[in-house]
Length: 515
Image (cartoon, rainbow, N blue to C red; front, top):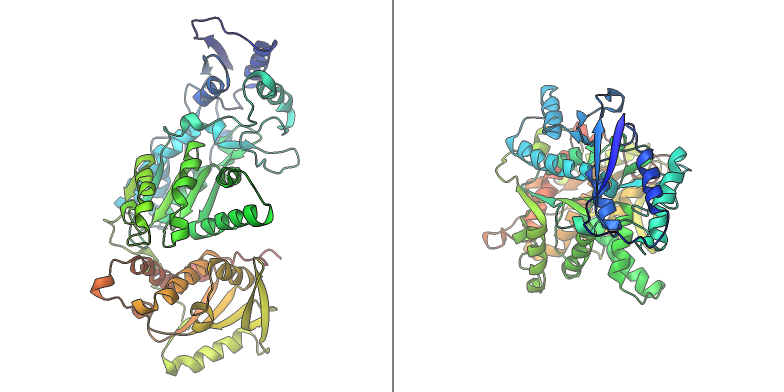
């Protein structure tokens, strides 16, 4: 049995602009049963939405909740009715993986997981603000917190009446509960460290641990996970569309922030880096808006915040963004880890996926012919957001493409082009990759983006190069701390991992993978 009481804590008699408010509150509270989670965020939400403050106190009987247990993470209800992970939920799961031999124990990873556990518990204790309803047709509402226009199975009428009255002239003009008051309380986490130390692994554990069955029926977590360069590409596309296509006259950033939050208020960014001046000049405005609206951000990067966009054009205009990250996010360093786990996974490399030198070119050609099953490759064109990309040799039937390094990296191409290739072909051959130096900085940047994009789409990458991955980009002492040098460490590591059996067993995530 769940006992819920409302206690008015305002000394002044409240003025109700509309009759019938208290009966609506009573119906809302009666809706909450042991099968529907209530926590302190309900009280905070009502305090924010109402003109007077009140408390929601709950007592829960010792009912067995094992049927609501998270399969991967031990959870339990406390006496306020909140679903909480135990004090070391992610760490507990991590240690289980260690015992099963799936991962190697690493103190730096445990340290980061402890911080992510703390963040996770804060999010769960404010679950009403970081979840969204599922519509009657099974789709997920993209209006975060928009309770009025969705059906929650048998419970729709209660939410509709309670929150609908609040919107319609009683409290708010906005359709979604505000999380602005939380923006200064729940800090995200910025995780930085060397390549292969487990940053993304830790973030993925956190992201995957937010299970739908830890929420009340009819709700899902409002979360999204995206590679940072893909995210920024989408932001620039939205800006271009709003200005040039829709002729939008208002505040473009408000529109973009709203669109971003509609995809998820818990945002996980992988490979956070800034090398482009266009990105550098808009990040402060963008992230300030996201954080003010209550977004919780977790990011991984190969650089600490203070080294982002180092030596970049107009970096003085970027420095306020660094201050914003350091103020609004907890910074977790993994630089004490000297292990590249990608290289450990790559010890058992599949033979014949990386060919070195002129003598191996014939073997590279033989493999290409074998993959095509002796069929004749053709030149095809694919679309990359309105632009045509010519693929010199391809088989659409077998999902295979072949390019030269010059085709991909010495011609003007960007992330959208490489993603289009990765989404259309599950196997990509690249030939004649040379040794690169700082004078080749633009081809180096494109190669970094290319490998990131292929990795993200889990493409099988077959390379013919002048040297092994460690020797492709050679940097002198003067340039050893440049952005490209740091970013290429990740490229080397990924080229190694992409030759491993573990990677090759991964399922391609391109357009036709489900057909």
